[in-house]
Amino acid sequence: MATIHFILQGKGGVGKSMIGIMLCQALRHFGKEVSAYDTDPINATLTSFREINATPVQLMNDGNIDSRNFDALFDALLCAPQESHVIVDNGASSSIALSAYLLENDILQLLEEQGHLVFFHTVITGGLALADTLKGLSGLATAFPASPIVVWLNPYFGEIAIDDKPFEEFKTYREYASHVYAVIRLPDGSKTLIGKDLEELFAKHLSFGAGINGSSTPCMVRSRLRHYWNQILACVEQAGIL
Image (cartoon, rainbow, N blue to C red):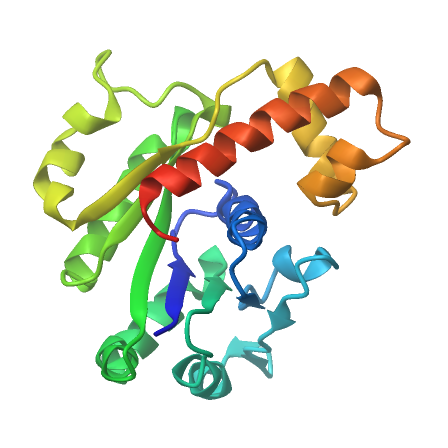
């Protein structure tokens, strides 16, 4: 049995690829065999990280997304090695196309018939994108009611709260709680400190290991990155997706 992780959220710029990058590194940290695919036709962020070694999936044909180009990807997923993990990072511009392909081709049933376990991962952010990301969660739960969803809460853009109520008290969460397998809260921190450290790490396309152990990384930056990374590892381990 392989474990397939689809990262889907129709709202762009909310941290989907960042989560894919962290998830890939975390699974490898725990000794898992991991392969990754980047289906974002606009911003292939996952592919830009050499240590991730993601395979790009070319979806565009004459300027439009050609859903037949998903065929090769899913041939590979169906044949994923036993006990391995596969991460599929999907861009906002191709999320509708991928969801439609999954439904039209009964992909989840095919994967399950091969003994594979499927998780959907989605992102909820604070700030102006809160409502849109909640709609993304609602749409995912509605379209794939039998599949477990891992919700990642990203507080970088603002507090994730409505009328001072936390995510678990949101109407959307209460409505779809039975679909949510785990909630992972990205660690909060100062935007001028760990926020800036992470921006620079990702801008250089470096892994956490490279940033933490790099001799050119200032000592305090290494310390903050190490603390943040240990929190991420604890969250992934507690989520029960290993």
